[in-house]
Image (cartoon, rainbow, N blue to C red):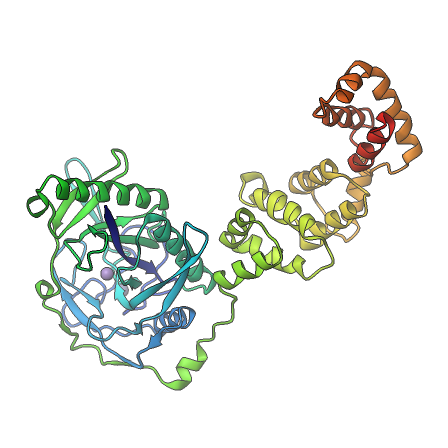
Length: 480
Ligand code: ZN
Ligand code: MN
């Protein structure tokens, strides 16, 4: 039996307005090579000037993971040549990174938790972007010099569940603290997986392979499982030494396999040395205090939601979406029932805010509207279908904003629920008469039919009946 040993390196692009050592814009998607200057092009005589915002964001991250902030860190040159690296070196941090240590607590597969130790987080420059066509290659240096925070863990992961659990939370942390947009498709959040195996009980570490730049959680899982099997097979076939060496591999999402990219360099291959153009970074107490961690972190939110009885599935949905999370917390402070808030904020509103119709809506649904809908639901003034009709109506047709708007719509669409039980009882009786053979079957144990009785009643009332009341009356009439 073998066990999996994994350590992660995640490159997070910080969302500063300008690059790490010059004032070029970091805007994504601008025309190629328009956001460049002598510094990020590596022209002779240009000098780097450190972006204070990037330092502050690194400090904020350090605080979020309870790490040590080195008040004296240094920038080094990591030398290598690549066409998208015009300076022929990357400015990075080796000896003394800005953030040292720290922890992130993750959920494990058996419902418990585990502490993942961070080794470090350091600031460095990103490279540009190469695009290879059939007969030529193109280089865009807009990204060259944008600030990255590289977050490195210890080899603490033992399965991909823990890895994904960590990555999801890290992704949330950098968005909650607003240090990165963490858009995986734009490459704002890129993961390198260092993976090796060993027989269970063995304390040694064996040869690790690095799988580079995977930008989807699904692919990371696939890559880990492929690589684990490759190592185990080599070990069992007695060809571990010949087949597994320290190297960098790429994941091919179409085939679901990893492929060798290049032999892995050791730190010495890069001839690191302190950048003579940059002084050590000194972080004063004043600056340290200035970086305030004012948000509730995802782990704390998760525990708080568990405490009040939100299901795991709903928790995931809420904490993964900052907008939903904000509105959910806003209504938690109100008098509404938890179930109402989950249905209307998380399920109904939350599932609409990402779709085209909603994004193109004339006026967004306000918190007041949402509150009014929930209030009318809880007061039995409208039923669920009515609430949905109102949400859709506001999304597509709304032209004005006023506080009684939701009630007006309910009136206009004739959605106000009929809670008159005498009226409803007549309809219930009618339906049960029509369905008499089904009523017999119901009495003989086919209890699933209850839903269809309610459905018939709803239909006859044009959707305006209170389904709960209808339900009660039906049961009362059938006499069970
Ligand atoms: Zn520049
Ligand atoms: Mn790096």
